[in-house]
Length: 266
Length: 224
Ligand SMILES: Nc1ncnc2c1ncn2[C@@H]1O[C@H](COP(=O)(O)OP(=O)(O)OP(=O)(O)O)[C@@H](O)[C@H]1O
Ligand SMILES: [Mg+2]
Image 1: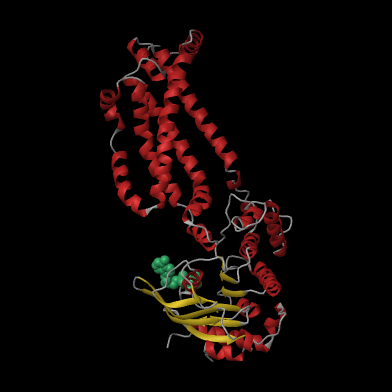
Image 2: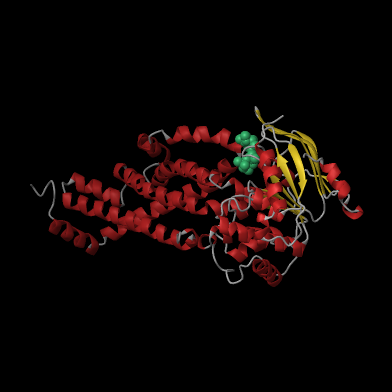
């Protein structure tokens, strides 16, 4: 069942064969806690990849290292062959919690990411409005975060991290705090945005269905210390619909991922 | 009960009118307000940057916080005789007492407010490519501003107490001074009148600070 990421890349066409993000032998400990051990994976340009795994297996740590917010003990992360040494605007991050600035309106929150870009005031405003519209929030430009629902706040956060056009979007359980119905809506929205903007996405989730519906590949992490236990290509055609979750192909993938997630470490 | 111990409301009212008419009340109040404003502002302009430094830098925190924590527990009242020795009995001594009573508390409260900035907002700033200075001004200070304002409001309340402490001991004007005089001549109506005025002034400034804070930090008020 377990497929090495290099094998997966063989399936790809020639122009995508060079990974956008390449992670090799990443290890990280917090005191006695081995969060990650020997994690290797590749993300190819414009690919949508999910990482699933049990709670505490090191998913957030992995994302944080790729984002440049946490330093690894060993191993490397490269983007287009260049080692990551800190955070950068080539990688947008959507955090699990709501990270809007409460003193700014929705539009100002998006503009916050554009402050230092060589844009005029009007350009900044129109870019922000355009990205709010993209996530379905036209008309909410002047709302403060406290006036928005959880789903809306997370949509503003997504608009913000897309607004400065990073090549890579890193998301840590972006819909974890949302109810099931809103989650489905957000997944559809995210897939649409991804199709329109073509960017490389790494999304962490504990919702296997969400991983299958949105992703090209699903990576399964083992229990702590986290390793990539499996790398599964999702064979379903796009656009994917919610109804697909009843298909046998979907169910088969779902149960094998579920099994891998909970299987005790070898 | 003898009116000497507790004067009637009428007596207090009459005393209030007399003091208002003879101009003493206004002179006393303005002397006190001037002292509290100067002492409190002095403490604030020093405490805000130092509190921010302690709240943002673990190295400065380690160096200064234990010291400030220690000083904070030293009774300010016990310093009154010393401050008279150092600064005489003029306004300078009042500033000093108010400063001592508020500055250290302010530093600790402000440092705490700054430390409460959510880690996730700082991470956000980093992923947006902001430098430390930009994160400080655009995120940390904005995020802790409501809490810093609260710290100032609370310590301003305490400053009134320190003002009176300073004026009771050594002064030739001010609301506290008038209370001492009242004590000397058994004018309990004067004492009560001035105690009430102090209470009202304290309450009014607090309400004013609250209202101003609500205006500035309107975004915080939950509609949920
Ligand atoms: N800053 C830190 N200091 C100490 N331990 C940490 C730190 N960050 C993570 N850990 C530990 O490392 C392990 C992996 O944490 P991580 O947050 O990466 O897990 P996760 O897979 O994201 O979990 P969840 O699904 O619950 O979000 C956990 O045991 C956690 O307690
Ligand atoms: Mg996590």
